Length: 152
Image 1 (cartoon, one colour):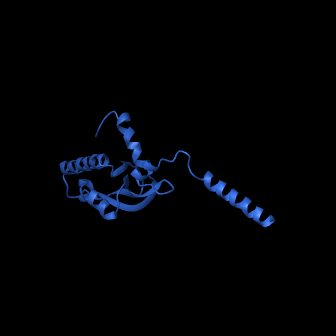
Image 2 (tube, helix red, strand yellow):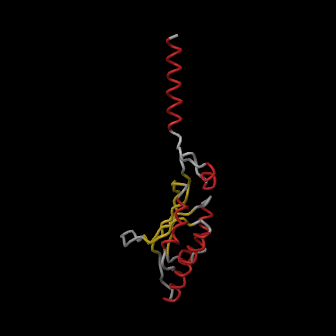
Image 3 (cartoon, one colour):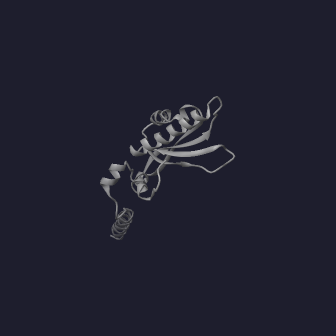
């Protein structure tokens, strides 16, 4: 009888512990919409943009490639594919900027990058890494336009 009571007590303790690990504010429909796993995370692609070469390009061509770069960011941010984009401060590694891209495959990322004039021309080189982060990351962009005074 003592063993049965011990087993029942342990089962109650373990079931209580499991109940405590479930998030009280969990929103199943939002998690599904954002593609979250049980930990609220998902895979993205981290792209590090590195200085390439602008040799052979005129100043106007370089300017046009960077205009294409900014237009591509705007386009794919609106499509919720580019989740984070921004420059990196001066550094010895030649890193110029980052993207976090919401894509199913690396091939999709490469397709997005080939539409970017600065990357496609080789003025910027792209280093692509798979990255695991919060599935809620794309939702911060909903507020960006509310704090952005000027556009590029």
